[in-house]
Structure formats: structure tokens, C-alpha cells
Length: 276
Ligand SMILES: NC(=O)c1ccc[n+]([C@@H]2O[C@H](COP(=O)([O-])OP(=O)(O)OC[C@H]3O[C@@H](n4cnc5c(N)ncnc54)[C@H](OP(=O)(O)O)[C@@H]3O)[C@@H](O)[C@H]2O)c1
Image: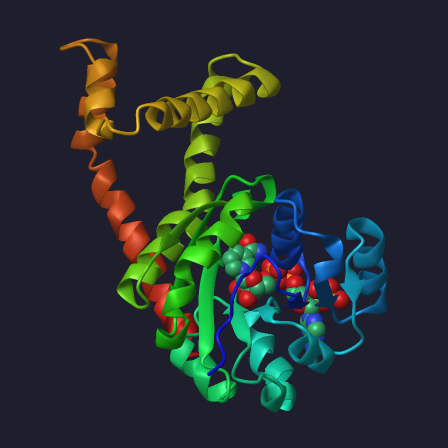
């Protein structure tokens, strides 16, 4: 098997360049990657024209060319379309290629069956803040791609924090906590904002207050990364004070239990989709 040397010199292709494909393209460009090293296909000509115009990347007319020409190939079509997209070109993925799949729920062993000759397969799970370079990207690799981990983390760094998660429970937990997690945080933000509006704040101010509270808490925790979150929380609570009363109520109402059940339900759905 030939050895892949560096993501820094590789030609990088995208089979599919919709929401997440483009978020990654933007991140790579922001990280300094030359647009001439990026190739993409899409279903419609309109999208191809848009990609060239907006990002200055190269577009190709068919997926086979991407698999043939590029060293690193992102599979960025919807999971339900993936088999139909790669089955006709599976033989084009030769053994030295690196395939990075974004497809939720499709395991490395399934991908390995579909693209038999290629052994260097990586799965990633980015969340939507990758759009701002503030995402969380989980990844796991086939055995033959393990040696790429350090280079991959460096390559994806412009998109946010990159975390290894073993395939299976570990990867599913990351998918739910960080991928779906963005949606869960928004759910809580919605209640927070509504409550402020009920107390007389206009929408704009209420939104500002919620965002700044979440951002501030996250930034504070980030600035003291060695301090456990429980310790930071203790610093804003005085015994029998206002925050204490609210937290006691949250605990009595078993918000933790409600969240855990919701996380587990989401994991179950992820498993179901994977089987389908
Ligand atoms: N969006 C997210 O937040 C998110 C998060 C984590 C993981 N993912 C994963 O990312 C992948 C892509 O999701 P997405 O949200 O980016 O989907 P999307 O916006 O629908 O993009 C899909 C892309 O695939 C292209 N496409 C469809 N059929 C094709 C074909 N036969 N040949 C070449 N390109 C084709 C589409 O082309 P046109 O644009 O011309 O239609 C489009 O550019 C999925 O596997 C999903 O699980 C997404």
C-alpha cells in the first residue's frame, strides 16, 4: 500500500457540495488552502457554476473524475443517496486514496464493502458551527487510516475542535451531544428568550441577553479550561441565594433526567437510521 504523505499537498475532492460540503470548503479555504487544490461535483449545473464563482474552486462534471483525480475525497451527499452515487464508480477508488465520509449512520465497514479497494476510510461528524470555524468535528478511521489521525486533525483544525471517537457507542454519543446538541441548545435558548419576552423585554433585547449569557458562560469555561465546570458553577452560587433557589428547583424537577432520556432517544434514532 502506498503511503500518503501530507494533507498539505493533496488534491481534495468533494462528491456533493451542499450545506456541509461547502461549510468544509469554506473552512479549508479560510485555513489557507489554495482553491486550485479543491475539486467538487454536485447534481446540478447551477450549483457547479455557483461553486466556481463563489469559491474559485475547480468543478468536475462527474464523480468518477473526482475519485480518479483527487487524493482525498469527501463523500458529502445525503446518506440515502450515497450508495447510488458511489456504487457505479467504486472501482475508481484505488488503494492509495483517502475517503472521508460525512454520511451520518453509515459505518466504516459498510463503506469498506461499497468501495472495496480503498482501505483508508475516515468518518467525520461535523456540527453546524463549522460554518464559523467554531465547530466540533468527531472522527474515526479504518485501521489502515489510523496513522493519518494527526495530519487529519491538523487539516480540519480551521473548522473547529477535532476529537477522535471510536466507532460505535462513542461516535454515536458524539453525534448526539455535539451534532444534535446544537439543536438541543437552541431549544433551551428558545425557552429562555420566551421567558424574558414574557417579562417585558422586546425580542431583540431578549435574544441578545440569551446569546450573551450562553456565549459568556462558554467563553468563561473556555478561559479556565483546567477548572471543572462544577467549580465554576459554585462560584456563581451563594447558599440560599437567588441562583441557588433556581438550581434547586432544576434538580427537583429532574432536568438532568429529562435531558438524559432525550439524548438516549436521539441515540436510538441514530441507530435505527444506521440500520436502514
Ligand atoms: N448539514 C449538516 O448539518 C450535517 C451535519 C453532519 C453531517 N452531515 C452529513 O453531510 C452530508 C451532506 O449533507 P448536506 O446537509 O450537506 O446535504 P445537501 O445540502 O443536500 O447537499 C448534498 C449535495 O449532494 C449533491 N448531490 C446529490 N446527488 C449527487 C450526485 N449524484 N452526484 C454528485 N453530487 C450530488 C447535491 O447537489 P446539488 O446541490 O446540485 O443538489 C448537494 O450539493 C450528509 O451525509 C449528512 O449526513 C450534514
